[in-house]
Length: 218
Ligand SMILES: N[C@@H](CCC(=O)N[C@@H](CS)C(=O)NCC(=O)O)C(=O)O
Image (cartoon, rainbow, N blue to C red; front, side, top):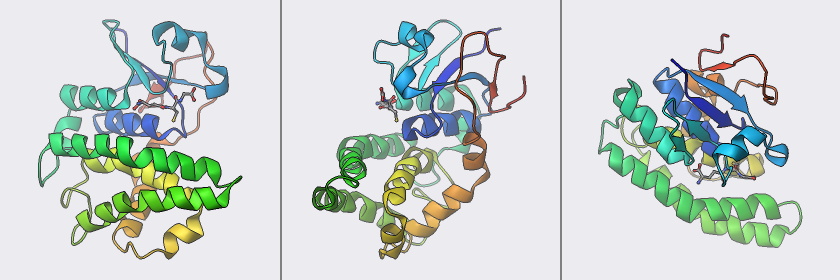
């Protein structure tokens, strides 16, 4: 049996959430670490869009969206059960993630990219991102995870982006009054699954020995 192939980039939040879903289901894939400024021709050959993550299934199906990779992982393994919210439905979690991609991520990108060159504009962008973060903070009131007392697909879909936001200016982030969001993010960063998916791999080149993710053996 050929294993699915995952084109991934360690620091990409979309790739992180795809890896977290695969990790939750212990679904082994062949991981190919991509360098964004020098993409492997094999990635370009299967995906015109060539963003990461891309998962190529053993029947040749190409999943080019992190949400599709997550949905596939949830549907084909224990990950579905493990990551089902104990409050609300998986579809609500996916809707929250999709809303974050549309409404929060553009402000995060602007904040991150402008921070070094134009702080005034960066702070404007940061302001626009706040509503979503306070919404998360409210969801977390009285519970450890976004949709209950159990880690769900909502947490793994959203947390990599909150991490990216927090890391633009850590001092500022941790000085804010989102008292539920801060411990939630810190717990995510310290969690075993997150540590497991953040292992470093060298850039993949055709002919390299296979890297099995999440198992990591060869
Ligand atoms: N909607 C896509 C977005 C993926 C995405 O934009 N990934 C970034 C890296 S974080 C990327 O590959 N950018 C392409 C590039 O920089 O050339 C998904 O959810 O998978």
